[in-house]
Image (cartoon, rainbow, N blue to C red):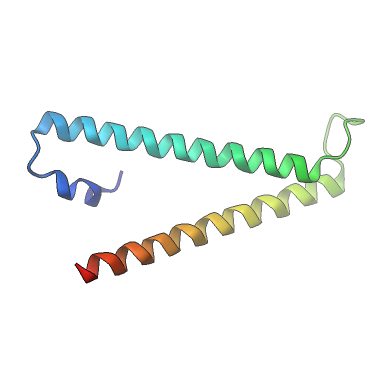
Length: 93
């Protein structure tokens, strides 16, 4: 967890800080799992056409790889943009 998230919690008792830290960690894990599940579902629906074979066909595999790369690049870009916006808002205060 990013320790800067706890900066506003300095006036809380240590027990509450630990509880908040645990909650933030759980939210981050939940969000990571949600993103992973979304990635799998989207790429599977877009790329897998048939169930005639137990493994992916070459074109399906290529599609899944490209889909995952695009999804992850997009997610990273969105995260960077939010960080930029947060940093801009923090400097205006």
